[in-house]
Length: 272
Image 1 (cartoon, one colour):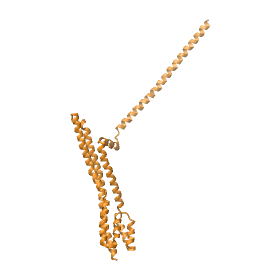
Image 2 (cartoon, one colour):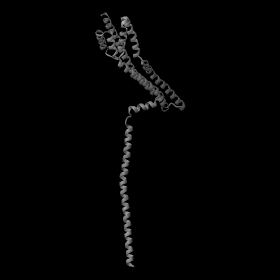
Image 3 (cartoon, one colour):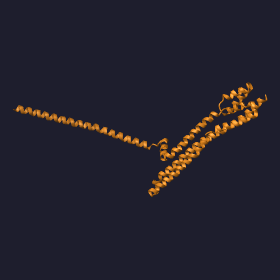
Image 4 (cartoon, helix red, strand yellow):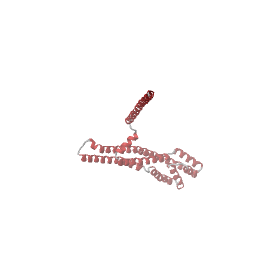
């Protein structure tokens, strides 16, 4: 009986010891997990802090010109700003087309006159027609028109050159009036936006019964932004317009000088 009691006592002690050991193991495991979790939580907190710091840094960085322009465009009432933008787009499209056309119309007139004179000396009128036929530009067209009237005399040649020169000048100036229209239209639209913005500001004052800056800020902002954008569009188109006009004047002067020299060459050819 004593042996049985001692056996059960030993089993109870072993069971209690194993239970304490298991509990100790669980506690140590939990402590290890807490120690591991704490750095993980600290790292997560550090990452969140770093992200917040990065966002704050990004907010502090100045916005790009594109973003500022987009923001101001929206603030200035997209309705009026869109019309001003259309004036800029159409004006630039016509300006670029005119610049390309005038650039292609620019040729070396001295070289053309020399080639025509050589062709008249070697092959006559027909060879001179062939020379100018293979040359682009308004000067070559005027020379071709004059050569076609050579059989009617120098008087008719001169009349044909003058008449066709007027036609060519009209072609060079084609579309320029539209650029001047958009130059005048853009600031007018801006001023219209200014008036409407001021009306909106006074309506806000009447509705609020107060003249605080907060009440009138939106209306005044619309008024100023539309005016600024209208003036910017007019300035940009005015620069292109002046360049195109100076280019046309240069081409017209070149045509007049070369036409006089061309008539002199034909007069010398007729005397031979």
